[in-house]
Image 1 (cartoon, rainbow, N blue to C red):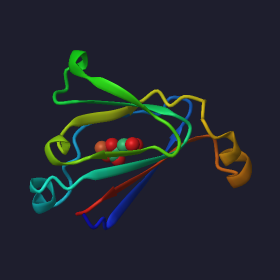
Image 2: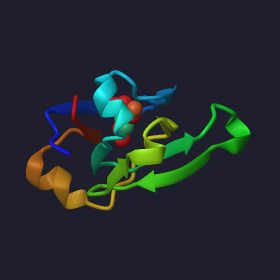
Image 3: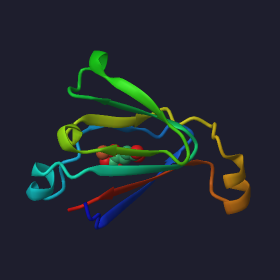
Image 4: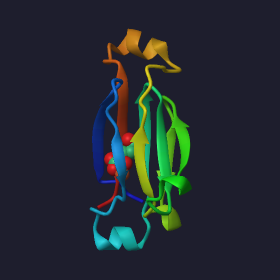
Amino acid sequence: MYPDTCLVSFYETNGRRLGLHQDCDESSDSLRRGLPVVSISVGTSAIFVYGRTERKRKLKSVYLDSGDVLIFGGESRHIYHGVEQVSCFTSTDRLYVESQMRLGRLSLTLRQF
Ligand SMILES: O=C(O)CCC(=O)C(=O)O
Ligand SMILES: [Fe+2]
């Protein structure tokens, strides 16, 4: 994979969420090959929800902490996913002191169009 796009999103701690969706804006070639989405988390922790269908009962979830890198590609490239509950907690208080970053979650999402 040769990522050529980086989407930068900032989630405030007071409840900004990203609803369930599939990432399908990339080229049909990129999607067909299952080239991955690489998500890098910085800042406060969040819950990433995902599943093969949109049905709430079938969703799984994983905590994304600062420094975590989540990759979904291949067969998982078309999973439904979203970001819930951005908490006030972070594993890296030093980050805020040293970088003066605003409290929240920064997500860098790399893709190849
Ligand atoms: O914030 C994340 O880790 C995921 C973001 C996402 O799903 C997207 O930008 O399409
Ligand atoms: Fe997405």
